[in-house]
Length: 191
Image 1 (cartoon, one colour):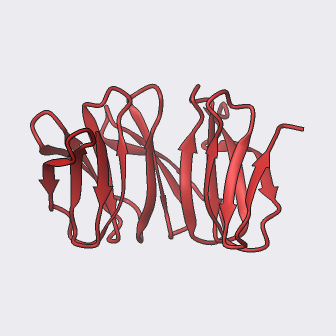
Image 2 (cartoon, rainbow, N blue to C red; image 1 turned 180 degrees about the horizontal axis):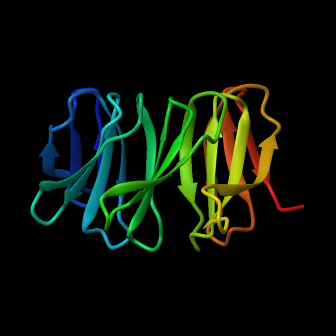
């Protein structure tokens, strides 16, 4: 299955083999900007230009949770591999880490100096990365530093000559790929 988000304030859930639309949801107050599937396929997270993030039960098609906190458009969202946390990125320059069990934001990461375009967890969940209009891809450790309220930034990858539009980890976490407005794709390794 695949999900798509649209400027018509909706998201759609599709069966790839038949090409049929299985579900249409139009509950957002503004343009739907991103969608992400939960690891077990039972939930979908959608976000919008108003800063709202909704959690949907794909079995019933119903909205089960509204997450509020971003001051502006949410650009990307992803579930942590543990299944009970999620991350969202916004043009408000922050990443919000959500505890889905407690239905609250557990941490706000002032990750960049300009709009954030993407956010991704590594397959193990031990790392989080973000890309931004500020030209950087930042990599964070996902455990809260004891007695502190922040994720430690492990690296700031700079090499694009402008906005970085997206980034992701390789499945084995051996490298990061990023793509920028400078029309380049860059591969980053720990060295």
